[in-house]
Image (cartoon, rainbow, N blue to C red; front, side, top):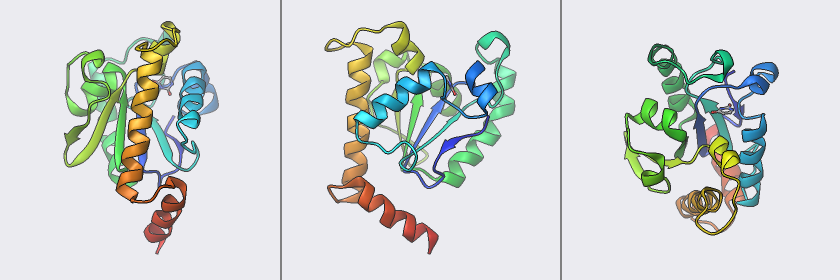
Length: 182
Ligand code: URA
């Protein structure tokens, strides 16, 4: 399961590994967590097909959805780093602790680093709660993981708007795409 979305996207979202639905459909984040993630991105004004590229640390579904082993992660990382280099996104969002630890080697709990801008190899990175965690903690009250993640997605959207220096991200994204094409 390689990717979903646009390879010209300014935002790359990296998860842990495909689940059963992803394995069946051959696309990341198309099960229950993915549906929630899409819904939250859309309500933060992202176009999920053009503004976002989604993928996972591990490309194959671990049996019974267990966490990927160290060895599985080690084998998968060269592919992921190639994806990051090729897509060259302005922002990388790491959802959940597996992505955070595997990609940038950070062992801090997500709850203490989510929503913070990190600089990794001169790339803007933001850790986010994993959408599966939001499904397990469904409260939408203020300060719930859901509402904090909404806030983080707004923050990412605002950052991209500032980078593009125009009020409409979609407009400037199409300009950016034309520039990449030419
Ligand atoms: N689906 C994915 O593709 N990745 C995850 O990390 C979870 C669900």
